[in-house]
Length: 244
Image (tube, rainbow, N blue to C red; front, side):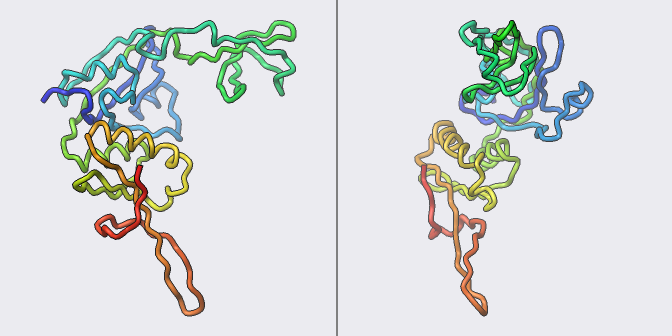
């Protein structure tokens, strides 16, 4: 079965600059071999929705028409990678703006925007706010390991790609119920990401609704009543829900 926009696929890849330098990979052994391993990075294959922007557009577009099991290479020009280098994103600031002496290559954040110091002349500092990959041609070696057909597995796999955690998932007539682990309920990343996840599922799977369910119970002990939270059992349709 050929892959089309909106399909859920599991991929692995390595990204290189056109000079062969590796800048990104999902393979842990490749990261270690190239001295770019980060213990805080989650390595391994993950699920993307074709056409949803989970990867650069040049690779995203190349998925279409392929089949599960495909291994290949795609060359990505700057405009379909991280964009062209924009001169308007290179700005100059007074030296007094910096808390420490800026040097070439220093990474800084100014007004919430990450940038890199490119030059210091006198009491003026030039900062480039372009992505460090902007203006560069890229080459991706990638493998499509699986085309996911089962609706429940689609939802679980996408959630796992975001958080590397197991979620309770139930497909119902009007959409899907998702029970996140209780320790994520107040997690900042979860609170930010769940709206995007809902949007992606609604459009890719043509669902009517996506509901995130949290259940709170109250139990009594011998001396006092105590409130506690428990993970959701989404088979109980009487639980309260939050709908996006």
